[in-house]
Image (cartoon, rainbow, N blue to C red; front, side, top):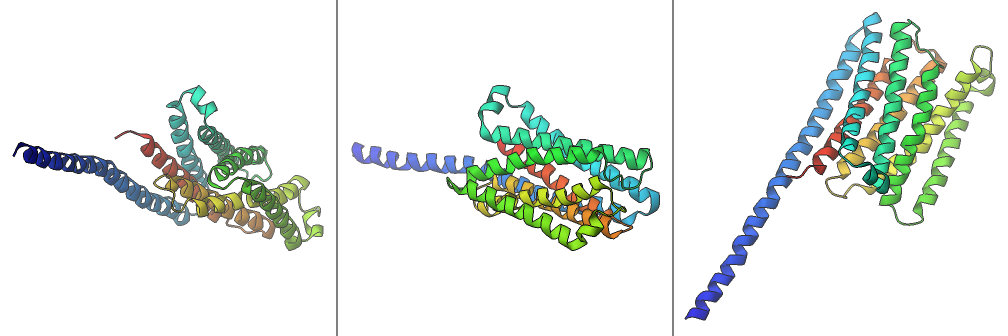
Length: 291
C-alpha cells in the first residue's frame, strides 16, 4: 500500500508546482498587457489633445503653441532615452549592438530637439517667420545620420544574412528617385531662380532624399516585427514616428515651395512622431524592469 500512496503524492505534487508556476508567469504578462493597452490609449489621446490645441488656436498664439509643443514633445523622448541609457554601464552600451543602436537613436533625437529649440528661438524670440534655411537645418540633417544607423542596424538584426545589402541599394535608389521627382515637380528653372535661395534649393531636394532613405528600413521593420513578441511595439512606434516625420517634411517642403500661408499641419506630424517615440521608449523601459 505504501508504494501506491507514494505514487499518488508524486503525481499530485508536480501538478501543484505547475499550477503555481503558471500563475506566477501570468501575473507579469497580465501587467504588461495592461501597460501595453494603456500606452496605446494614452498615445492616441495625447496626439489628439496636443494637436487639437495646435489646430484650435489662431494668430501669434498659434505660432507660439506650435513651437512649444514641438519642443516639449521632442524633449520627452530624449529624457526617457537618456534615463534608460543611464541605467546601463558604459561597457555594456559599447559591447551590445542593440544598446549602441539605442544610443545612436537618442543622440539623433537630441539633435532634433536642439533643432526644434533653435527654430522656436528664431520664430518666437526673434520674430522670424519660417526661418528656412537656418542653422537648425544643419542640426536636423546631422540627426539623420544617427537615425539611419539605428534603422539599418535593427534591420540587420531582424533580416536574414545578406538582405541588408539589398535594403541599402533600395534605400539609395528611393532617395535618388524622390530627389528626381521633387526636381521634376517644381522644375529646374523655378528651383534655381532668383526667388529661391541656393541653400534652400539644396535642402529642399536633400530632405526628401534623406526621408526616402529612411522610409524603406522603417517599413521593413514594421513588416519584420509583426509577430516578434512584446518588444515589437517599440519598433512599430519608432518606425511609425519616422514615417510621420517624413509626412511632415514633405508637407513643409511642398508648402514652402507653393507658398502655403498656414503650415501648422507640419507641427501635427512632428508632434505625433515625437509622442510615438516617447511612448515606445517608455514601453521598452517597462519591458526591461523585473517583476
